[in-house]
Length: 319
Image 1: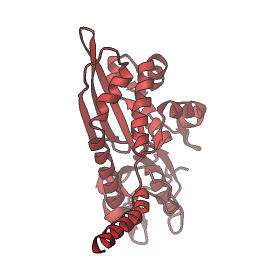
Image 2: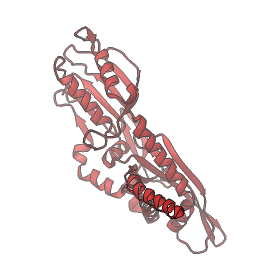
Image 3: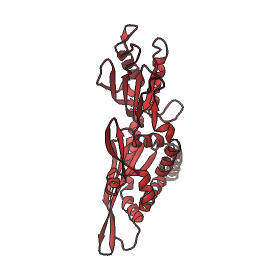
Image 4: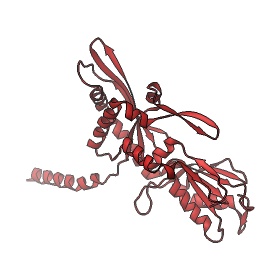
């Protein structure tokens, strides 16, 4: 009878645990080809910012030109979906950007005409709003009629580009399997360890906050307002410092590059979610600061310029 009672108790405990485990939040993922893979295969385009030209991955060209890539992304998506991870589809996000390109490509100051461009990669991440980017690289090995795939899969924080998980290896040789199948088989053997790394990192963000950067700048025509302007005995820079301390997780942030016209806040730990349960990013966090500065006693006009998910620019003196 005691054994039966113990077994019944264990079963009851298991039933109680199931709903709790089911409620564990998982990070939203998006699979993309790596920068290295895009460069090797010629899927890059030129992007110019502040007079500096650089090569960036051209995901649209890659998806249109390489059916193996499309199939490989689909295979990785299925592996992640089977493990309960929510996903954003790269091709769908690109189409969404194209539909809204006129609004998304350029933000222009209403009064001065000042403009600040956002890079294609930053725009992609801000539109997708994935928590973690899965960057996939692979190459095909051929020995006679046999083929195998060597791959690298990196989990990158979409807000900071920090690598938070990784897996790499070479799959078994095959006579007939298609490349996407070989990629799936090679990745599968490491997938449990990889997803454990992803979840552990996301759990850490829930406890200690997500890291973002907030840049504060003063317009040249900011009507005599700068970061040394005083309000009730405090310089504006101190007002912003105090707001950061009050609104970050554990009061954690690092202030660098502080002058009367600019300040940079790095490693700013913000909550994962807003009060309504929606995800929080650098832009939303900066907008809370904008609302604070717009109220009494400051009544300072400001403008927010998002730069991807993990960085935002707050410009003082113009709306």
